[in-house]
Length: 236
Image 1: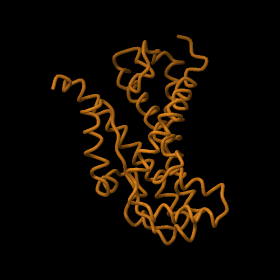
Image 2 (image 1 turned 30 degrees about the vertical axis):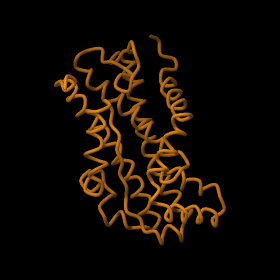
Image 3 (image 1 turned 135 degrees about the horizontal axis):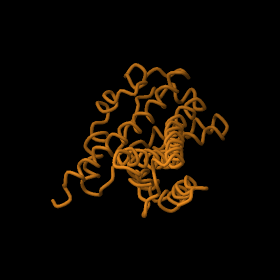
């Protein structure tokens, strides 16, 4: 394949580092919140950790195979991960389960904020400049060769975590946004939502397809508004 150049593979390695760290933070956020609120299942499985090993062992297809396959085919990475949960605890505590679901996207948004601060600081101090064309890999470019890799890393960190956070808030099972709805509903209704999610877990692929259609119609507009907000007040 012509595209399998050293540069393409090196960029893929950087993509994978960002993907792995972002996904692990997301799942560790879920696991940490669950352990604090009373469900120790993920804690016992080692998921309250930034060590990627237990997450990769649980979902090798979503954490290893699919990210690289999607990158080699499409030039960007996608995948998935999950934490083990106690369904009985979830049904007894639907409101707490909603907070557990929200913790994952919040972890991603925290990384968006941190990388955004680093990007703005680098622009202010002349480490980075604005690109000629915006993409996932180049929200900024390094002003020197030494800062090129840092600029690419921060661009990917900002974009990928923003995408993960927003997409996971789409209120369609099995995404986090579906359970997050329970924070705004009576507890009995929230419990019925969780019952439905467990009962129809076999339709996960259908739910993901529907969620992607919704995100394609609405979510990408929000995504790009957030990206362009990053440049507010920056002179080209």
